[in-house]
Length: 610
Image (cartoon, rainbow, N blue to C red):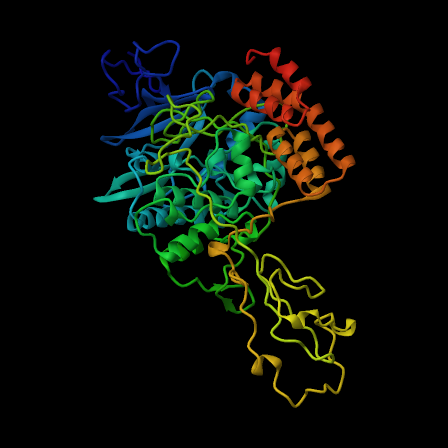
């Protein structure tokens, strides 16, 4: 056999050239695949690790002096490798991953084209088990959970400091291996759909909108599901879901469809982890997890290592601003807080267990890893929530697990008593010249300009009218007050008992029931129309229902409904074309749920997904 590099003749059974050491192709290799072929003149393909609808991941070997190094080769299908937008995106992502050097991040070696023109990435081959496998065994002890999360937070911190957001953080993308005798050594995979934020992101946003980028609904943040901007806090929300699942063996929310996942993440408060497991969970750990799961990104930790410090009970870092003093409040890191619109979200694909950075298979299949890259000609901007249901094969739609059994992808919900945002009750009948008592409230609901009475039974003195001149707390009292020399009323008369929940903030900073985050009323209808036009029918319907339930006007509701009805057929057609039948049906059914699904159902009947 002649060496393709130096043309030296070698024995037929040789694997490497006896003169230059270059890998030799396998003459018995399958003509339809890459096994036995040499890629990039350095990597000899040995076997398939995983495959899916977008490409294949191979195990390969590279000659390193007298030894060999195992390498994972991730390839794209030929038809995708010749798409200009995909090629541009592929090279951009390769450059993104190449910047990451943290020991807990998968290492990137090389990228290029195979002899047949397929794009490939050569990266570190890691032998181990996914965090998903560990979670399936049941709740993980707190100490072990913190040891694993510390490494994940370190990898994310480096990426965030470089202005890179992962966007698909989940247990499948966290691999546990043994390194230098240390168990549970973490490798974070699949920065392949990572997004750069900040000044350099504009061109990337335009490029990404040529195709589609995805996440996995059970682990996606509310803003990503709503098609809003992505930021480091989006990754921290996903990390909070992972931490919750590690501690309890189940997800904080239970859903059967992508549409339901979106609704749960956007509106439902997660239960405290301690209510779903028998293992004791320290209070600071529970508070930290619920802090990471806040609906509004500004209410979450801004930095991954700050989140870990909350988990472990360590004091906050002192951050030094350029030209200013240090401060302990988590601040803006080197990347600042610049953000860019997120790319549209499409169905999440995953593949069989392989610890190399994976490639997505067809929809509706749960697996041990996922490679997040998909192609489409239509911009589905608002986060196409119809990602293939993230569940194990053999149990589609399963949601009826026993409370004590760990459920990797779905879990039962635990009702929690409604929390009432309390206000401080008046302590006594104020004299007419005195100012009215100042209302206090939690940070979630800023005090209104006028003092309002709390919803409790007040003493008879409350019937005494308070002069209008003193209704505004900021108005100075008229001089001289008759009781200026007397002690305040609270000094001589005890106040009535406060309401049960008073002004204390709910544990973990949970949002109060009845005050859903995001737009309400006509603003929700406007957001619904935007979501529909950008391709997220499920999110649009959710916002439409929110508009209806929060006092939206008839005109706004009709406009939003019309936009959903107009956009749904195109979304159904696009998803069906990509082979995502579950997503196509989900969009059609979502539109039908508000009486706007006629055209979408008709389009569905004309596809192979009917």
